[in-house]
Amino acid sequence: MAEVSFAVADAYLVTAAAAGHVRHVGDHAYSAGRYVDPISLSRQCLIEHAPPVLLADIGPLGAALRQAFPDTDTLVVRATADAVVDDRLQPLITYVRFAGPAGSGPAGPPGPPLPAGLALGQDTRDDDAVRGWLVTALAAGNRSRGRPVDEDRLAEAADAVLATPGRQSIVLRAGTAAIGHATMLCDQVDEVSGQAYVELFDSLVDDDAARRPGLAALVRACAAVAAERNLPLIGNVIHPSDSAGFDHSRRVLARLVATGWRPEYVYYECPWSAVGGRP
Image (cartoon, rainbow, N blue to C red; front, side, top):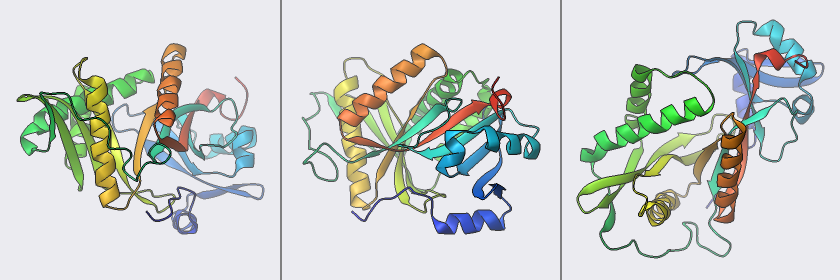
């Protein structure tokens, strides 16, 4: 596989500057723009790039942002996984790359076969089931952050995922019943780095007994698709805003790291009331 990098690319900075998104705090340049979440309609100030000095203490940055983006609900900032950030920035989503356990091939180890009665397949006739699972995942992600959700907007977002060029859904079956899926977006390009990748958008097994072997098989199948394309497989972990949910998400992330996933970058969130000064 070609070298993988999700670091900010010079081409992104040139494009952001041409669009008027590059601003400065003293000698430090950052890119910022408005973004409205399509499900919660939250109004965000989205920073896709900022140097470490501005992230370690967002006070100077926040003061500039409050003037530039007054009609805003929250600040969302992208940083590398190893960045040291201000404690007002709380993890929102961690993006992880599947590298496979040490010593494995690009798609990871072959793993044990699925238990009898379970099988993987792809069939567009399963799209109604996949759509329902996507709605469930999108709703849960928003509610975990305390955001309101609207059923119509959830349905529109799920339909948009299904209609994305390069979307593939691998379905887990128990006999003839679809009991789980892994939905990938195979033609993704990260705007900030220019890195092409396969995104594991969502995976779920709706059966307790089949969950562990089913999810493992689904991930192996997705890793194989990415390996065939010579692209990295990227997944994500959403961090709920409540302490119990946040702790659970950190345990999930630790389990992923133990099974061959590597954090690449993180989106952090800060309430607008805490931007530009301590609440």
